[in-house]
Image: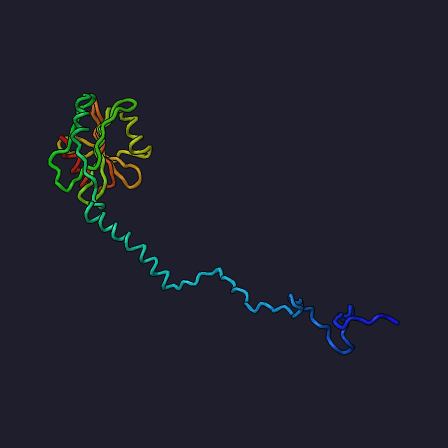
Length: 216
C-alpha cells in the first residue's frame, strides 16, 4: 500500500483539463496568495515639439526688440549717432607746414555746412602727403590731397590707372585739370613744380569746384 499524499500538495502537472485554456502563471505572495499587479499607468511620453503658440513667440520677440529700439533712440538723440564726427584739421596742417616739404594751402571761406571729418599728414615713399577729408553740404565725401610724390606715381595710385584728364578749367586764377576717377568719382588736379593737389570724391561738380577754388 502506497503512503497517503499530503492534502496541500500541488500536483507537478499543471496541464488543464481538456477544453479549458491554460491557467496564467501568477506569482504567489508571501502567504501563498496571488501577488497584486501594479495599477499605476506608465508616464506619458514627452513630446519634442514646442507647445508655444505664434502669439507667445511674437510677444517674446517684441520684448527683445523694445530695449534695442530704446538704445538706438538714445544713441541717435543724445549721442549724435547719425552725425559725422568733426575733427580739427589745424594740427595736421601745422605739421605739414613745419615739415616744409611742399607749400601748404587750406580752404578759406567755406560755409559752416562743410564738415571736416579727417586730417592727416604723413611721410610716404617718394615724398609726403597731407589729406583732409570733408563732408559736403549735400552729404557727400570729398578728399583734399596735397603731396610731394611725383605726379606720374601719385595720380595712378589715387585715381586708378583708368583715371584720364578731361580738359582744363580755371579756378581762382589757377589752371586745374578735370580727371575721371574710381567708380562714380571725379577729380580736379592741380600740377605744380613742388606739389600736386587733388580734390576727389563723389560730390557734384559744383562742390568740387567750390572746395578747389577756396584754397589759399
